[in-house]
Image (cartoon, rainbow, N blue to C red; front, side, top):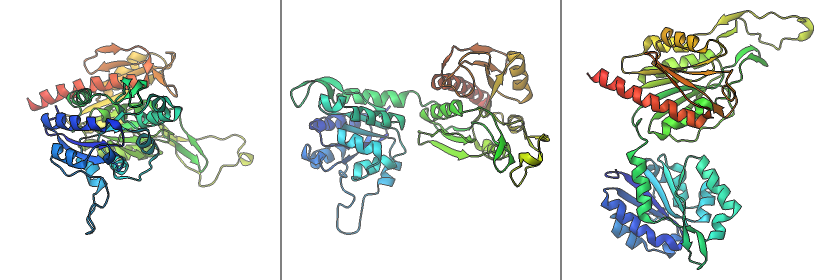
Length: 408
């Protein structure tokens, strides 16, 4: 699974740096191309000539290795890689990575890297257990990095506990597992809508809903982790994207979301319509704040917004998959199935506000998936991150089936 993969191996100033030699050897044996980036402190523990001999590439440590105007581009290196592995990763480097302190080539390369990043901590047990280190690791996990937990055993201090860098063969297993599974959406382009839309009444008021965007953002992360190139069109939310393969476009109104979705969907392999789009907007938007004193009773005339799902369903090509959502309060299955058929969807995700823990704002959801053949699959109450994985599992199968039919 590592044949032809381009791996950046970051080495920091730890006694465990000697293990990097074995890791390079293992990666090269499995067909990977390895570029070593080492911190100045790392060179105190293992020599660049050893690393260069094993990797067959000059080792990069400084921005400027010569005085002739040439320099190492951390941006180009970050774009080159299929993965970056920092092994060993000291507490100092972990802290710098977590807080963006780009004072050496390794951290600068990390901040420019578009590929998945794997971090193998190595330090004494008290340093690893310290709240600062644990908090920094949580920050890095939140950025979408993969932490390869250290093992327990005798450390350089001769104390015994957790802090030993994981063995090179285990790190190789982690990388092989990553590249052999979970990349079912590699080279697929997915367009996802998320969050609410706000429809202006006047400069300070709007019609909206309670959508937090959490479900749509979880779907975007799930797709990106499986290798997809994701474009996330989101209404006004307070969430952040994590994975570097998510391109985020912020919009406010249903018309803006419609315009972006219709522009992007023709080039996509799939569309997932998770946004809670306002069905109506004010027919007239006041250019100044409407004063209550002159309008004790106010009547709003509403006009229909464009139907994003129906419009995308109308232009959907045979190889494309379109996924919709239905949030219902009554006759759930009937309404969801009707929406599925009317809007030419491949499957629809149904949830009901009558189910405790489902719907807007919360971190959990309880869904059913209904496909174009009328098959219904029900799921238990789960975190929205887990729900997203279930939905993407179904998307992967649907895309594969479409591909077989389209190629036939």
